[in-house]
Length: 129
Ligand SMILES: [Zn+2]
Image 1 (cartoon, rainbow, N blue to C red):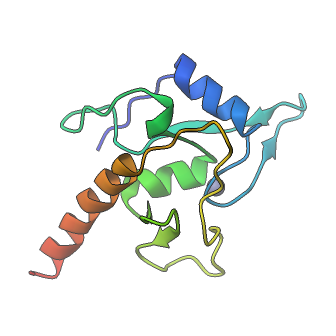
Image 2: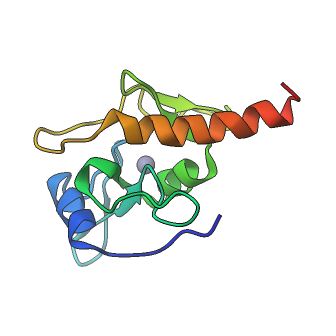
Image 3: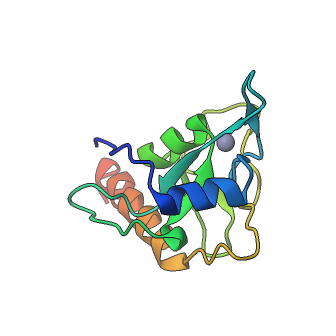
C-alpha cells in the first residue's frame, strides 16, 4: 500500500496539539533545532481504495515507527482506545497500553474501527478462516 505524504492543515493542527508526541508510544522526537518531529497519520488512509477524509478526527500524531506500524497493520486501535499489537514481534513492548488522547482532538472511533477491520480481514485470509 502506497502512503500519500501530505502535510495538510488538519495534520499540522494535530501535530501541534500533541506538541510532537506520539499517541501510541509516547515518544517525543526533538531535532537539533529544538523542534519536535511527528507525522500526521490517517486511520482511514487517504489513498485508494480507502479514500479516507483529511480531517482531525481521522488523524493521529505518530512517530515515524508507529506511523509505519499503523500503515502495515502491526498496530490497531481498539474500541476502548487500547493500542493493539496485532503481531507481537517487538520486545520489549514499545507501545502504550492505551492511545494518548488530548481534549479537543475529536478523534472518531469509526476510523479506528475501519483500520482495525481492514487488517483483521487480511489476518483471517492468511489463516484460511
Ligand atoms: Zn510512536
